[in-house]
Length: 387
Image 1 (cartoon, one colour):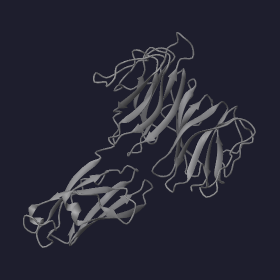
Image 2 (cartoon, helix red, strand yellow; image 1 turned 180 degrees about the vertical axis):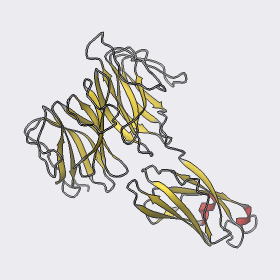
Image 3 (cartoon, rainbow, N blue to C red; image 1 turned 135 degrees about the vertical axis):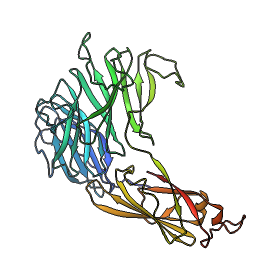
Image 4 (tube, helix red, strand yellow; image 1 turned 135 degrees about the horizontal axis):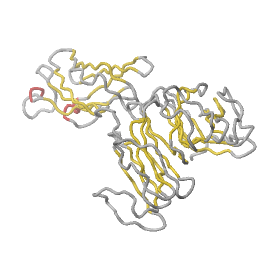
């Protein structure tokens, strides 16, 4: 019989709302949201007291019993709301939301250093939420909010959200880039948007509207596919919501129709796979370092790869470098059947970097019918690296 391990309240004497939850690398939950409570519980806080009418908050909860590891307000002289939170490869907390605080802090060189209306914000806090690492505002002179985010393998931040006119007849000057799918506001009350920033939040790399002439074009979810494209969806009441020529369904129905879009934001994540051929003619084989600057999906850089032929097993050792400059190795072992692409490697540790043996030359077989590798023969193995 399954049981609840623990439950816990977290809040003060007024309105407290949890908006998102993310697990860190150790599986410890980080929660974020916003509150109007002047007595929201804080611990080891960057900001111990509420600064505006509504402040965002970030808290980390001990998985064993639900107690606070840390908790902090994150707000300024207006209203500040966190809608989404993620961990970057270094364990920092990246949060997005909206603010109208005129003293919202931004880093030197930020994409947008000053408030222009009600703006979206992207902020990176240290892993213990004791320090603001970098932050930028983003938007035009109307009402702009970030709803959620993803972080790609290169550490770039992709956000989705909504931009809204404050009154009918006004102009929406939300910033878009030259390579945008849709550079002009669709009309009505709201349009969705997707934007991509570099890791330091000093460059806007891509930004597009996504909406038609109806009043509601809003996204509800965001994820990244294996190629780094943004996949998002939501609802619309725009009969002219922008569709591609090969759209699976083109029928619009009132009051709302759901939509899904896959957008190439131009993310520079590099190839997700590279094929290296390694000869096991010698005991230790160094394949070409064509992947030496590649990043894994968790943001680590691969600095070296070696193979060792141990008769019926190939051992792969991959050297990684973390974003903070520290290094570690990961070892994978390939069973004989993996020579023929029959399965993934087995490993003694969790893998950041996966390889699949695609095949070997005829010389690595004992005759034409045997399925056993012959270590005495010259073996040439093609291995696909999924990074």
